[in-house]
Length: 189
Length: 189
Image (cartoon, chains in turn green, brown):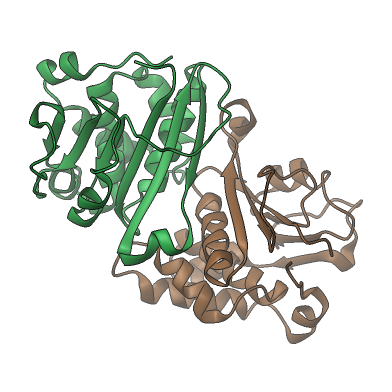
């Protein structure tokens, strides 16, 4: 893997993909690597597709835009269809399992899991889907220590919601099997 | 005013200052000017202070960091104390009226309004404080058309929450008097 790891988080407006992207960037910095986080505004955000990006690197990051993501999270069909065409070679795609993966994607690099359903039923709050996704991402890619990730989460959630968000992280992690975690592990930097 | 308008949004983690910053940037782009939005990660975010920044400009923005804000929103005493020392000349400070303004601030440039209380009692949801603030900011500075701002909000809130967020925007705007709106009007770009 190259030193620079580009991640894109996509869904519909209001699903909290920006916060997911922010938390991953925060956890990266807490863990001792560099990160920048950004999102597009204006025309790109039309059609109800919301997109946020995090770049992680051990070195200084001079260019903050994501051009060839190494990782894509997609929570809606529109966002999956739109962004799955612009991936780096060997990129990993994590998608909600209610979506249909485009045929051109390498099935071996697709992680299809019930993110939205888990948030709604197991965590009990649909709005935690973004945090469920963050938990699953971290378990699959093995980016950060659990405490680093939780600290990243805590810096960006309302006081008093730590418990439900920790539950969301854990339920997200539980969606990933040991085999998947072994297969998709990344070493950033 | 210079062409470049720097805005800083500060509060405690989880008060949604990043989203406030994102929405202002989105509305700026919808209204036809340029904007970049960013936030600090890591050590700067320690101590429970969360900070986000938006730069608005008619011209290309080459430097996305905020160094001398023209506008500061502060929702907690810690964030007000920390960031009110780093302002551009003539900067406007909007603060929750539960806070104590440092004596070195020019009282004529301070807008002290009940943002948190309005969210809690008038809108009925404490978590809308960031949107109440956005409504107040836009009314005070007269940055964007109401429909541009609401479109910016809609792109970043969960589906089904349009009504309460529109109420939050309106209640926020209602905190600003005609006199204040006349006094603090900015012309961006």
